[in-house]
Image 1 (cartoon, rainbow, N blue to C red):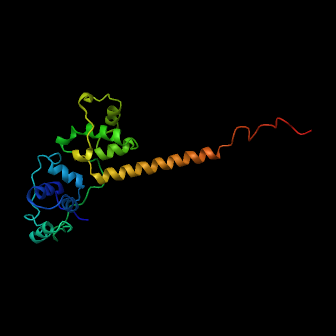
Image 2 (spheres, rainbow, N blue to C red):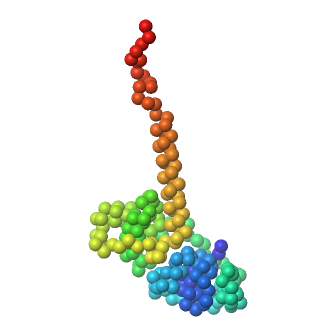
Image 3 (cartoon, helix red, strand yellow):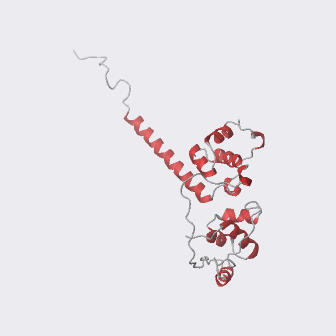
Length: 203
C-alpha cells in the first residue's frame, strides 16, 4: 500500500490535529500502531514538525472527515500526478545523528529479548556494525555504563514489521538447523553396529 511522503511527520500532524484512531493513522502512514502511540506519548519522533497531508494534497478534507466520523474507515491517499521517489533497496541504512547514540540501547534490547537473531540481522535492522554488537554483548563498549536496553521500534531505529520479519526468519532458520541435527543424529550408527567382529562367533 502506498504511504504518504514523510510518514512520521504526517503521523505527528494527524495525532495532534485530528480525531483519527491510532489504527487509522498507522494504516495510512505505513507505521506500526505502537509507533503512533509512541508519537502520542512523546517517546517517538520528538522534534519532528508535523506535516499537514491535506495542505500538501496527499489527503482530501472529505476523506479526513469521513475517517474521523467512522473509526473503521481506512484512509486513502489522494491521487497525484507527481512521480514518487524510488525506494532505496541497497546500501547501509541512514540513521539521523540524533538517533545514532540510541543504537547501543537498541542492540542491547534485541540481544536480551531476541537472542535468536544473528549479528547480521541486528546490524541490518539497527544500521550498526558487528564490532559494536560484539562490544555491547561482551560489555566492552566504551559507553557500557550508560547503555539501557530500549525497544528499537520505539526509538525509531526500525519498524515493527522489520523486527517481526527478522524474528520469524531467525526462528525458522533455528528450527531448520535443529531438524537437520536430529536427522544426522538419527542416521549415525550405534556403537558396535558396524566394523566390529562378533564377540561370540558361532562354531
